[in-house]
Length: 83
Length: 198
Image (cartoon, rainbow over the protein chains, first blue to last red):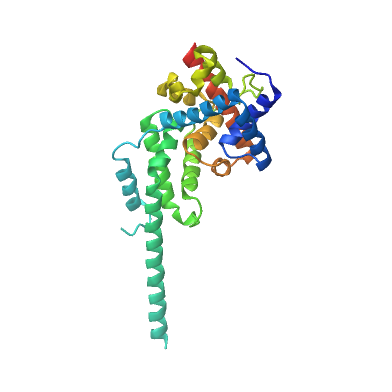
């Protein structure tokens, strides 16, 4: 399903900036008014929010065991190290 | 009385050295506190765990050597990432053809629309909708992004840096960060849609 309502197109254009908190106050008002009134865009907004979290979690890998110790040892090797 | 003057300047020098040693230790400890976050970004900028580990070690070796060039009170995490992204470029990652800059036909809702068409519009409301995608698929799709786009997407969406921090780290104008981010995210969604629904 795609919608060609110009208000939805405007909302699509603003949505990433809205999620990034990068809109002007006036744009935030336009986006929020539309999201309150439009189920189609509201579902997409919620999806985008979840998608971002999913991408961040999926792509985040813990540091391998032992790396922190290796980094701490580099302190002693740096010229002028006191310890 | 030259002797007293010498003693005073020796004491001043000793104090200066002690202060500098303290500052240095404080710097090193703060830098090490960011290791997990630095690694998280590094891991997505290179292909293997080993490369990421090496890149992070090179970054810290350089940071510890040049700690004096860090201005206390400024963003150390961004400062470390600046070193890391420069080293990553210096490592001679493959030169890529500049990706064509034709506008993508698909909009920001592309992936949502594809999932809605395949699974039903109401499924977009459900918490588990994103689980249709696979975690490995996300990792692969990020790895497939052209470097310039990937750097920005990884810094902002994985590293949670602001646009302006990303601009500073990569030494590009903020408008470039925004356009690469915009396009990078769209390519990512397109890849995820193809991977998931083909």
